[in-house]
Each structure stands twice: as structure tokens, then as C-alpha cells.
Length: 167
Image (cartoon, rainbow, N blue to C red; front, side, top):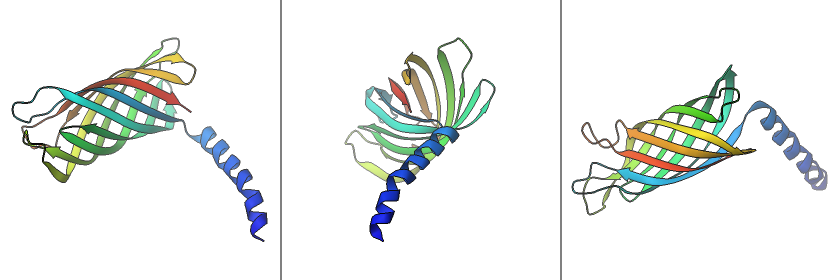
């Protein structure tokens, strides 16, 4: 009995993969850049982002997706999710996008690097991707601006660049 289910597993995985491919567009990305937090006496520090987005619906040149990302730096670590709206014009390789993300953030308010745990975070993200190979985009720029996680006067900013692999 168990062997029958094991034989069906590859067919089930193939069906799920084909269904996901026909319904949603998945992309995985990673970026490296700098972050400027509101921590006193700190300059730009090394920061990175890893995440993915899944396409939900196309409205002509507009693509609506859901994005989930982890932002990591020496001053702040965040886990965020939210809507992503990208513009893809025919015969134009650059695709600008905007996102509004919410989630949690661990951040440092001092130069000592001690982090406050699991604070609410809200962030705007603006950027542009450019297709360089089939299924591979260069994330030319990804700029994020914290709205909430560091307090009313502490808005961290991140600027990074990287690669996107569209599956």
C-alpha cells in the first residue's frame, strides 16, 4: 500500500509544479548594499536582502505580486511581507516596482549593537530590475525606507543591488 503512494509522489510533484507555473510567477532574489540607520554616530553599514515574490495578476503592463524578504545588517534584521506592483512595458528592459511591506524588525538604537526584539516594522520599497538573460534580472537599485520600526524620528534607509532569478 505504501509503495503505491510512493510511486504517485513524483506525479503529484509534477502536477503541483506545472500548476504553480501556470498560475503564478515565482522569482528569488538577493541583494547587497548599504544601510544608514538612525543609530547615533554610525555611517552606512553593509546590508543584504534575500527574498522571493509570487506573481498574482497582470493588468496590462502592471504586474501585482506578493513579496517576502529578509533584510540583514549589523544594525537591523527584518522579516517583511506585502504587495508589490511592477510596470513592464513592451520592448523596454527596465521594470520599475514599488512595495509596501509590514512585518517585524530587530534593531539597534545604540552603537553597542544590542538589539530590541520583534518590533513592528513598515517599509516602502522602490526599485528597478533589468532583464540581462532569459529568467535573470539585474536588480539595478532597491531603495527601502523604514516608516515605523525605529520610532517616529528614526527612519533607516537601505540602498542595494543584486540579482533576480525568475522561475
